Image (cartoon, rainbow, N blue to C red; front, side, top):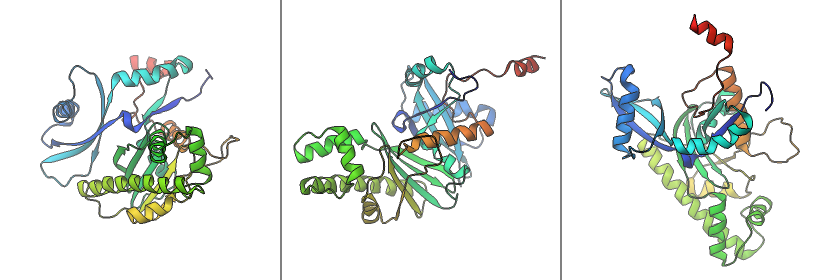
Length: 299
């Protein structure tokens, strides 16, 4: 463990249950946490025998009788299972959040102007997610059923033969969605057509549910790099001009491409150090406050 190092990690989108709930404006803030937790267990039919970590952020609501909250629920055992191996090496984990919330750092660090409604789609080896931000604030997120591993499996089914995962990833990053092998090309067209129809369905639902008139930009990317030609699917299936989900900055690395989640984690860590906010910090291994702070609080 490096002295004075700051340790951060993240949870995948698929690990988090997201929902929007309404709570009466008559409930005082002192009772809000209990009221939200009771309603979450009731409306989402959560198993009362399972302990959950429940966090929430208030959203805009024109309802004169109710307040609206985005609620995020994570199985406490899952948090323990995922973070404990890290803690064994680092002793503390200062900041842990979910992948969709890492994107907020792009606005706070001025990589993206907080103006308009933006969609982010990112493919990872064991997950994929879609996130909507409006004027720099979180609106909605969803884990997609198209992780890179799942895309590879579906591709193999379509062509009727096994293609090694790493070879498939090289195909996507080297040739993109314009493969020179005609059979591969047809299968990729079919597969990504299916993926973008699914994304379109999610966007239709989101726009209707959250009163969004228009998506201004969509950012597309993946853990392994950019797929050339994917922007054409954004235009054809979504009617949106696509931008590359790549915000690489000066960083000590010999790799030509860096997983964007790592960059977002670094930016988010900087923001947390500058202005600690534990509302969406899911770490169960935060370091204790400095001893002098504890002494001041005790006197």
